[in-house]
Amino acid sequence: MKINCDMGESFGLWVLGEDAVVMPALDMANIACGMHASDPSVMMKTVALAKANDVMVGAHPGYNDLQGFGRRDIVMSAADLAALFIYQLGALQGICQSQNTRLSYVKPHGALYNAMMKDDAILETLLDALQRYDVTLPLVIMAVPDHARYQTLADKFGITLWFEAFVDRAYDEEGRLVPRNVPNSSHHTNEAIQRQADQLIDQGSVTTLTGKKIRIHADTLCIHGDGPFAVPTAAYLRNKLQKKAE
Image (cartoon, rainbow, N blue to C red):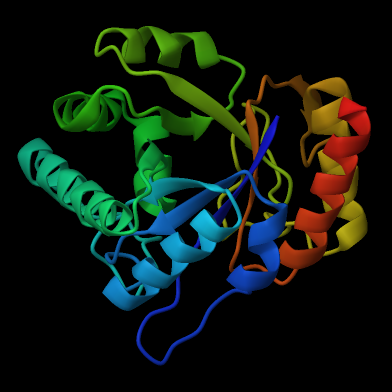
């Protein structure tokens, strides 16, 4: 099980996250591509930081929404969404190429991520675009109880899926993330985050806000780099997974 984190989400004079501190504990860095956050200089620095720490670089494309941090739904045609998606992958791939490294996977951000999990048409638009851009790049999506259905969709396009679970977000009865506008949608203590991490790693399950236990198969665990617990969470997960592997 790998650790991934959303990274490179600063831009201009605005600084977000502690990328340099978190990066050494990661396996996968989801790097913003300039639409919901980041800029060319931040992308360049974040790719260099990932390469220096032997961390896989993943594209983290989102809606064109700097003010809303990519967390607002935007209605787009399939053609426009595919173009926006491919544009961002190409931007990060170019920066990777300039540093003699490569793009290893793709993980959509925020509202786009949630939209593809709710609407098969949006997911198929992204799968088709990824197939046309580079069919070898895996797509990271949410580990949900009905994950086999999503794998069937991806198989139509020849795309590999990596399923992720979240250690710092609450889950609902359907095994999906509780919307951020709902109270207690995120965990606000190290203890709560570590308890959910332990359950995901040791038992392959999560407990919902109502107390229901749901089985989840996850290939990777996500940390939100913009959150206040990113640094201790990354350190805890790295230590936990290393001990489990011994």
